[in-house]
Length: 328
Image (cartoon, rainbow, N blue to C red; front, side, top):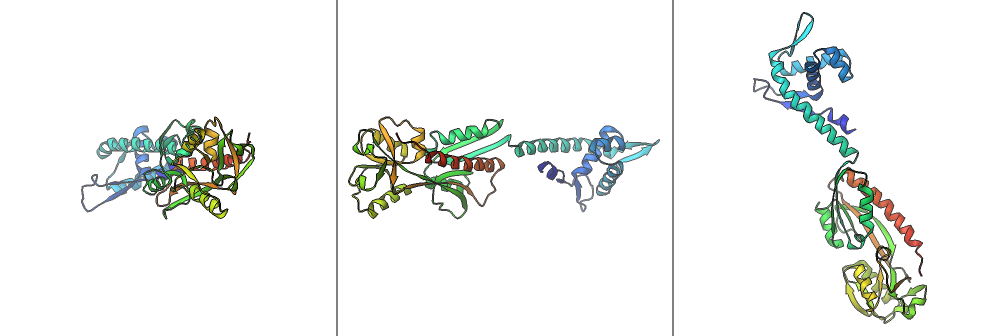
């Protein structure tokens, strides 16, 4: 599709014609026909190489001569002879043909996703294993894809994608910019606690179970913090927020050290060693909502869109895998 589009690229040549009042618009096919005749010596051979009829080649040359305002070929003893002006143009057409061929090769490489750039900003929770694995899966059969991967907060990620500093973002929902679009995937947070804690024997932990217990949570900049507080408020449970941190995997470390009980996302649990900590379902559900986002005021690259499509499938698969999680 792209190679066909490039065939209608038009070259504007102003210096060929001496009259300043004339501006000539020359099509690539005309230049191609002229160059091929110069190279093969005959209209017959040029037509064969170009895959078009002899009259088609002759018409292209006639229209080119009309645009230029001078003849390119004369016949001598039944053979085409290039004019002096044609000889002078030949060097220029070599440059045009070479540039077009390079452009065509590049276009095919882009279309086949052999070249390009993945420019991603994502939450740290996804950078421990999930996203690096998916990026590797995506680029392993692509010979020249460069990668820019940055971890930021959800607010920063949305700012970066909105400002075109990253093409793809994976951030916590909701999406807070009007020039961003995305798809949201919800996951259940799990309760983590030391394996020797009395509540570890339960298969499901409730808000009532955690009434007054020292909690390790993310800070108010995260939606999971507000959702958990709402649950405690609705159940009239004592909120004992003993420790706050920015990252789920840091919360896991604090729980491992015995500072309290926490709620973390399933990506952290699936990618980090649990040590002396066990995970349990928590009711009522506190969701961790992730959004794959992109800007609506700039086209997404072919490589970027392909990665978004892959990521959507993998996020759904991860949700299914997490729903089948076995709690020891």
